[in-house]
Amino acid sequence: MSTFGTQALLIGGLLSAIAAVAHLACIALGAPAYRAMGPGEKMAQAAEAGKLRPTLVTLAIAAILFIWAAYALAGAGVIAPLPFTKLALTAICAVYLGRAVAFPLLKPAFPENSQTFWLVSSGICLAIGLVHVCGVIALWSAR
Image (tube, rainbow, N blue to C red; front, top):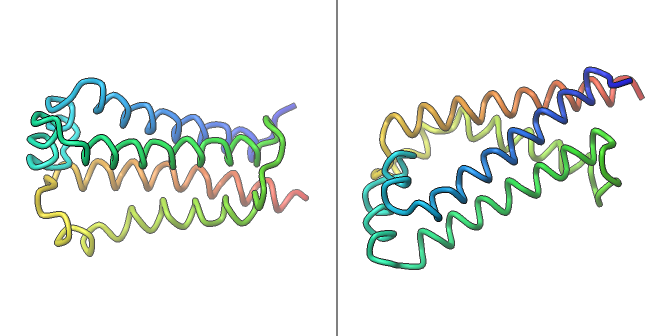
C-alpha cells in the first residue's frame, strides 16, 4: 500500500518529468514555443536564427529536471536508490522553493523574461517544491 509520502514523491517526480518534457517541447517546436513559455524574445530570436545556446540551455534544464524526477522516484522506492538520495532530495526541495521565492532577485539578471514567465514559473516551482517537501517529510518521519 502506498503511503502519503510515497504518493507525494511520485507526484513530485511526475511533475518534474512533465516540466522536463515541456522544456524539450520548446526545442522541438522552436521560437513560437519559446515565446509562449516566456523566457524572452532574445531566446526566441536565437532559436529562430538556429543558434545553439537556446537548445543547450533548454537541454541542460530538461536533463536536470529528469534527474530530479529520478531522485523523487528513488525516494518513493519505485526505482533503486540513487547515490545520496536523501541529500539530493533535500537539495531539490531547497532549489525548487528557493527558485519560487527568489524570483524578484533573479529578474534583473534576466530582463528579457516576461512578468508572466516569472509568476507562472515561480508558482510551478512552489507547487512542485511543496509536493517534494511533503513527500520527504512524510517518508522520513515515518522511518
